[in-house]
Length: 77
Image (cartoon, rainbow, N blue to C red; front, side, top):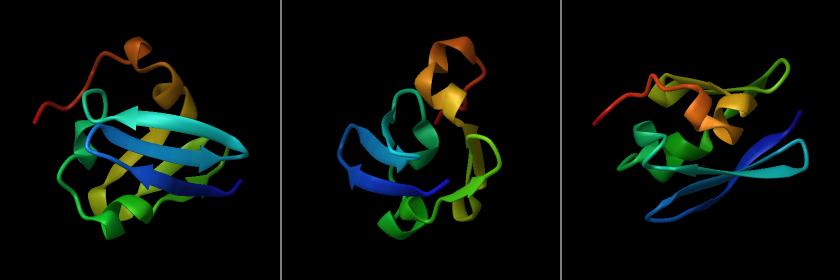
């Protein structure tokens, strides 16, 4: 599965993974806010729908990205 960050804005970032685009708002995914472009764009795909940002030590599944309301444990900055 290929994954890449396609856009970064002041509201969040967009990821293209397996021909689907996902939006990660900073509100739901605060680990990406105020990080460098280099750190955000270094994403790796592992297994079935798992993404990992080594420089940020962030590990997310596509299910978490699609349905953040199902995963109430979130980091607060």
